[in-house]
Structure formats: structure tokens, C-alpha cells
Length: 235
Ligand SMILES: [Zn+2]
Image 1 (cartoon, rainbow, N blue to C red):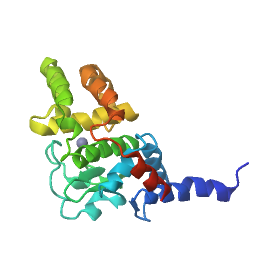
Image 2 (image 1 turned 120 degrees about the horizontal axis):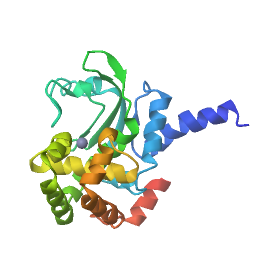
Image 3 (image 1 turned 90 degrees about the horizontal axis):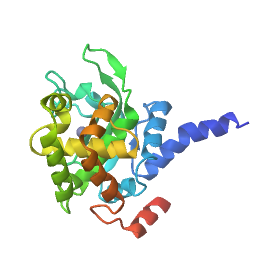
């Protein structure tokens, strides 16, 4: 049987060490269960993703809450969320201008109570897909690529009004809908997204767009520099 000390190391210490080796900041007030879930979700990503984000100066942060970590944002409204929602109600955010990706363990529910964030693994994949998309903006982000745009626009145009209403967040006008669709479809490809209740509808509505994500990911929009990746993993 595994000793307590060994189990503790594997479940509590190793995930923190792994995340910190990838440039993450882990606030020591977050629980081992939360850290472990973020770590486990990161294992479902393409292996080059985190090293590539790190190389571009992006940083993951595990924080108790967004309200505390981002006081200036706390009462502002996130893009595309229902009326009345503010950032303190939200479980994660990526900030392209600061190259930060924050995951919170706690958030304020709509009735004012503090609640534990419960969709952590899917949110990690969704936000890291956003971060990757934003990190590649200068060299060509995935959601801006012609293959992705074409497939997405074709499929959105075919959706009945009732489906468009249900998928609202992912079919917002302008770039927002495309960016949200990319983040969630990539998350689905990697193992599950931030909106599990819409997963089936998204798969049914965007088979071609999802195929573009699936087929293009490995030979990514930005070529993976294997030498740098290996060096950053070893470091
Ligand atoms: Zn999003």
C-alpha cells in the first residue's frame, strides 16, 4: 500500500510543482482538491500548449476568487453573460493585454452566497484555448483562420432560430461568437468544455467546424518549436 506521505506528495505537492514548473502561480490559500483538478485538466491538453503559452509570456494563476484577485473588474460585466452578472460571479478569465489566465476556486452566486466553482476542468480547457487563440493573434489566431471562419459561418447560417437562441453565447455577432465557439469546441476536442449542458447541441450544430479544430490542431496554426518545448519541459 502507498504510504500517506507518498499519497500526500502525489496528490498535493506534485500538482503544485508541475504547475509552477509551467510558470503558474498557485496561491497557497486554494485547496489541494482545486489545484489537483486544474493539474488533471492540464494533462488533457496538447502537450505543447502550456510550454508554448509560457514561452509567449502567458501565466496561469490559481486564486481564491476573481473578486479579490481583480478588484477593478469585480463589478464590471463580462462579455456575453446575462444581465446582472459581474466578474465576481465568474470562475475564470483570460486577460490578453496582461497575458494572464486566472482560475478561481470560489465565486459569488447570484443570490450573494460564496460557492465553490464546480466546472473547473472544462473551464480550464476553455480558457486555455482562448489564451492560445489570443497568444497567436499576431501570427494568425485559430478563430481568425479562413478555414475556421468559413466552416463556422456556414454552420451558423444553417442553424434554426431556436438553436441560435440556446447557443447564444457561441453565436454572438462580431468576433466574440467565433472566439467563444473556438474555445468551447477545442475544449470539447480535448475532453470537455465549460458548458456541459450544451455539449451535445454544439457537437450536432458544428460538426465541420469541430473537424477543422480536430484536424488542424496537431499541425497547429503556429508551428510548434520542438526544441524550445523540450527545453522548457526539462528546465
Ligand atoms: Zn469564453
